[in-house]
Image 1 (cartoon, rainbow, N blue to C red):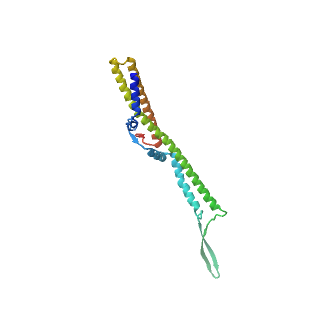
Image 2 (cartoon, helix red, strand yellow):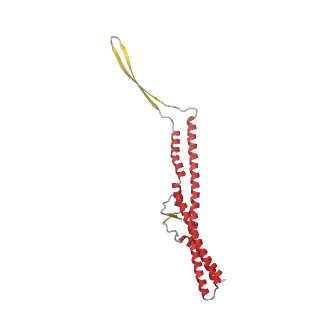
Image 3 (cartoon, helix red, strand yellow):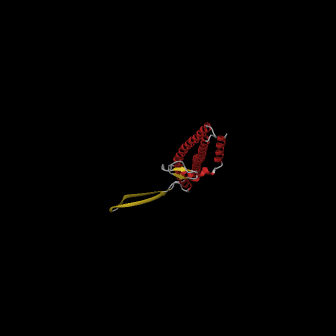
Length: 230
């Protein structure tokens, strides 16, 4: 009963300190880069190849719409011709004359072709913008999920650290009471097992956090020397 009382007291004390989950130092020895959710979303959008490709296509689609909106879609064509001909003269030598001619032509659209082309360009632009927005939403959802997984594991590790500290202090206290004859050897062994279990849970959480940080870092294309800290 004494052991259970000490363990329950330690667990309740740990759960009553939620701010420690945010203030706890990172367990990873590698350098960390602090990121907010807004930073993560911005970096993810800038790094996503499909989104960047769609955004590059957007400029071309906007240019096509601008061209389609012009009054004259086809450029005017300028032509020039130069000829030489000989003109016979009565009683005189043949006269050689040079003649020049220039012209300009313009292709005109009829039967509503201009309107159809403009509508097609506008529809293509709207569809491309919808595709960009869909890709952006997907990127933001995936990034947010990975970001909050990192944040959750950071908070879990902070709690696990406090729990381990309390379990170790409990085991030490039970061991002293066993030496004093107030607790049994079984109580001391159980307390030691609980402390070791807490230690293993903390190590497992640290491994999960490292994996989650690596995944988020790859998503944001961060430097391999710095992992994100949510």
